[in-house]
Amino acid sequence: MTRRHRGEDGSALVELSWLGILLLVPLLWIVVSVFEVQRGAFAVSGAARAAGRAYALAPTDAEGRARAEAAARQALSDQGVDDAPLDVEITCSPYPDDCHAGTSVITVVVSSRVDLPLMPAMLGGDAPSFALDSTHSVPIGQFQEVKAEDAAP
Image 1 (tube, rainbow, N blue to C red):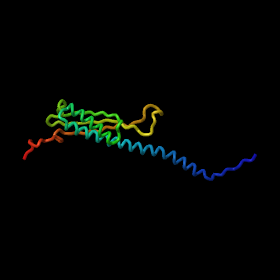
Image 2: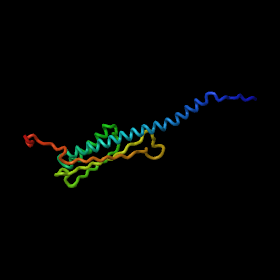
Image 3: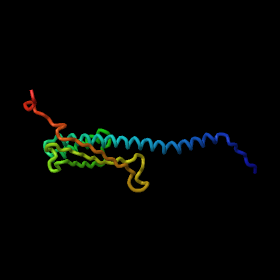
Image 4: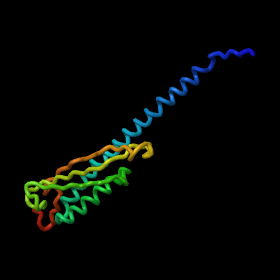
C-alpha cells in the first residue's frame, strides 16, 4: 500500500476562515451587548426624568406616584425595553410627608435591568443581566401651571 502525500495547499484559507469565525462571533456579541446596555441606560434616564415631571405636575402625592410609574413605564417602552423590571422610588426634602408643599425638591430614582442578548438560560441559571438606575431631581414650582386670572397683566 502506498500513501498518497497531501500537500498544504488551501489549508491556510480554511484555518483563516475558522479563526475569523471564532473571533468574530464573540466580538459581535460584545458589540450587540454594549448597544443593548446603552439603550437601557437611555431608557432609564428618560424614565427618571419623565417620572419626576409627572410627579411634580400631579395635584396630590398619591396621584403623583401613579403618574410617575406610568410615565416611567412609557419611557421604557419608547426605547423598546417593554419587559424590563421597573422600580420607582420617590423621596422629597425638606417636607417628606407633603411633596407638593412650598419649596420641596422631589428626587426620583428609577431602577431596572437589561438582559444581555443571545445568552440562553440553559447555560446555567438566568440569562446574565446588567443593572441600571438613574436619579432625577425636580424642585416644586418648576413645572407648576399658572391660571390666566392669577397671572400679572
